[in-house]
Image (cartoon, rainbow, N blue to C red; front, side):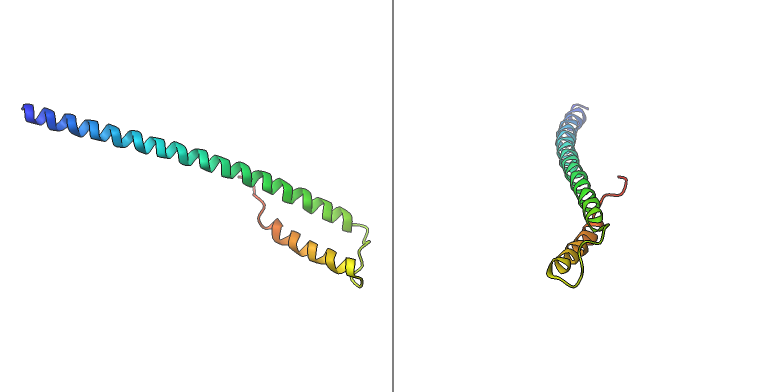
Amino acid sequence: MIATIIILSIFLLVSLYIIRNLLRKQEKAEDLLSGYLLYLDRLSRVIEISDKKITELDSIGAFANDDETGTIFDGIKQIQEILNEFQLKNI
C-alpha cells in the first residue's frame, strides 16, 4: 500500500514537471509565432504601399519601354508582381 502511494507520488511529480516544461515551451513558441506574424503583417503592408506607388507612377505612362529608364521601370514592376504574391491574405 505504501509502495503504491510512493510510486504514484513520484509519477505525479514527474508528470507535473513534464507538463510545466511543455507549457513553457508552448508559450515561447506562441511568442515567437506572434512576432513572426507581426513582422509578416508589416512586410505585407510595405508591399501593398509599394504596389500602390508603382501603379500610381505608371498610371500616366511616363515610362516608355524604348529607353533605359522604361526598361528599368519594367524590371521594378516585375519584381513588384513577385512581391505581391507574398502579401498576407486576411490572416
